Length: 90
Image 1 (cartoon, rainbow, N blue to C red):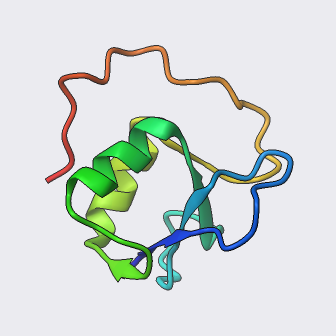
Image 2 (cartoon, rainbow, N blue to C red):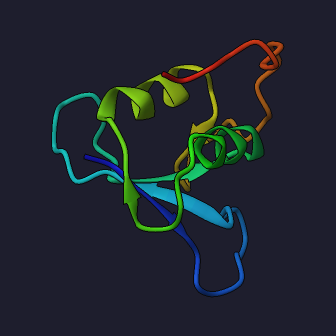
């Protein structure tokens, strides 16, 4: 299960202040740490999650599919262009 974490030190470079560490090694991704765009942070905090809390893995992949996560070194650092006001992760 992925865990939602708040960075203890100030974010540097492309790091986000909150991130997700995924302990699963399923083939969906070769990454284990995902940086979060501000909309993803709002969604996870809105679910009542605090630093260190686990959540369902499918929710992580939904955030990823919506373009709300990124990994350091990815080429596309642009914010998603779709309207996310109607999106929810349940």
